[in-house]
Image (tube, rainbow, N blue to C red):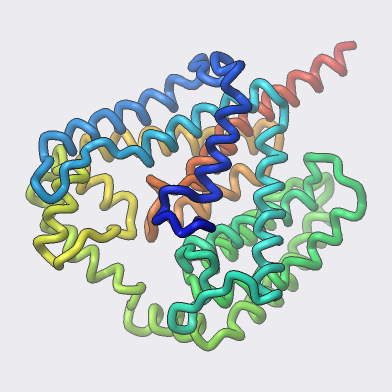
Length: 374
């Protein structure tokens, strides 16, 4: 999100990274646009985008005429490139996810050094990033670090356990963002990981469950030391308050009901939301957002894409016991139901990682069989 030269998002570190990435793969671009074994995933995504573009075009108006949603287009391209990159360079996205987690460690270090800190009320933000988005990213990074230490897919030495010492500081950071979504995503993923981690004996499994329970108690104590976060959870439990999302959703329902089959495109939604409350706003729910843009038709296409992605995560776990792709489905679902992911680069990158993990699992299994045969 960082825009170091204050160019109003024309330039950012993320965009620079994307440009550099494209430059590095451009000489071998045909290796990165393969569709074999990917049609069931790519086709629903591209058809959804085409339908979204068409509905936005026919609903263009004087206030909102930009019918080509470039952020989603580029994210699908990124997803496509990354999945194929795994075919070119084995475990490359696995390494990328680890580097992403280390990037969050750097962010936490900057926080404790007092660099780039911003506060909206009592909630922490850094370098202009949204509090919820920032909290979710660090929560995801915490999950990544735990799984990388435990399963050690990259064959890092014993010193990898030192990474666990960083976790309390990362959770303090999440706590300061005041993000309920980030906390829920982390706790659910941690519980799922503890339950699904495969062991050779029942005794080891019991030991892991006991250790995980004690660790989770410690994590919850750390997280709930924030009055802001505790009050937000209490407010949700007692009054059902979910950060004004319920009010936003009530405003959106009439828009959906007018065009439930095909929606009104992004341009039509922006116009209607401006008429209703004076400005265009995020629905904070991807399902409702897709229904607004493309109706039931678009929702079926988008859910088909998600189903194929998440199925890859389950298959990778079933075939090879890969835990991280399965666990990352949890924060993705949490964000889909309460946030924004259509334009989120990290969201599409995680989708690519989940899909590519199946290729990793199949290749590992094939190599293992070849070794046994030899």
